[in-house]
Length: 421
Ligand SMILES: *Cc1c(COP(=O)(O)O)cnc(C)c1O
Image 1 (tube, rainbow, N blue to C red):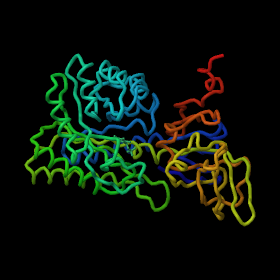
Image 2: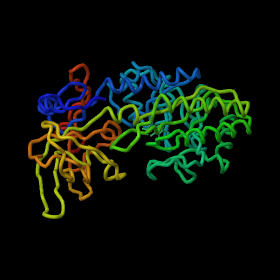
Image 3: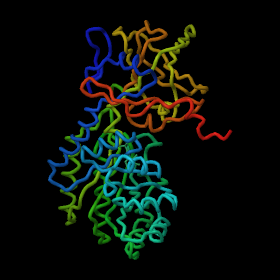
Image 4: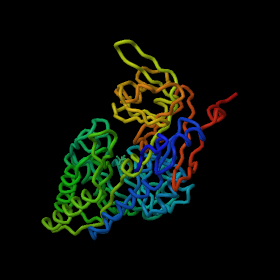
């Protein structure tokens, strides 16, 4: 994505002045470069096409979803993962083909299972042995299922976003025999068709090693146990760049490495290569989105720190307090030298409500200026809350110099709409 200052010293995204966006639509607001989102999707497509394998790319809607986002996913020929009744509802309301929806979740309610079955989603990802019985009980037709494996592999990423290790609430453990029991149970059911297996080793993974290592383990396990599958889903977790030094997963080279490795593992083991699926979320929308805020109070504690407060906070930006995530900020309305290190703080009633602890900003930053926080396209709006009765921000897609509102700012009225009088 091209974020740069124009000749007037205003920060622009794909040529559009972000100062104008902030002034016209108010802050906080999340702004996406629509072209960038589409480009990411196309890059994954192209990379898989080169491999010659049968593949599917499924967007993990938890990263960011709304009707317009779902439409975009459909237009670009991706499938879609949902993990709750609400995500399924949003996807269906956008007119997405249910056949291309996959239903995930470690604790699907009975109601969710029924809803997924009625909606005729493409497949349900089994995450526990009990769930097999539940689906079997409610299914009236044959239903495709994919078993989520816990491969017992540790990916090098933040502990909270690591999911493939032995002690995890996700998946059926290969090492502890739950996975094979799951396969037997599915095969014993007349209504369940074992379409494939799935794993997801974690998020914000920079290299291909964890995925390849896990694919090897899974293929060997399938071969040893004589399990035939139409699909192996490798999950998501491809990294993005938040700050200098982070690596955006190299889509072209990375997918080439992964697919070549799978081809050679399959050859070694004599295993026929099924369709290969991936589930990127963050890498589709993360870098394409930024959050615009207006600067309010600036507090200098002599010889200690300078706090620059903005008009949002952990209600729309939880990842810093949740994961110690790092971000970069840019002054939107002037191109001044970033000559000072400050803390950018939110306005909510928590000391932990910090956006960036050590942000490089110009010392000229003052009340009324606008700041852009970069790489906030994934797990920001979707993790937003109404803490302190903050209204969820608006969201815009920018394309060809035009801003298209895709989510309106939450109104005050909406904050109390469910309250009884
Ligand atoms: C979260 C998740 C994804 C997407 O992860 P990203 O880091 O956003 O790519 C994909 N699959 C599963 C099962 C997930 O839980």
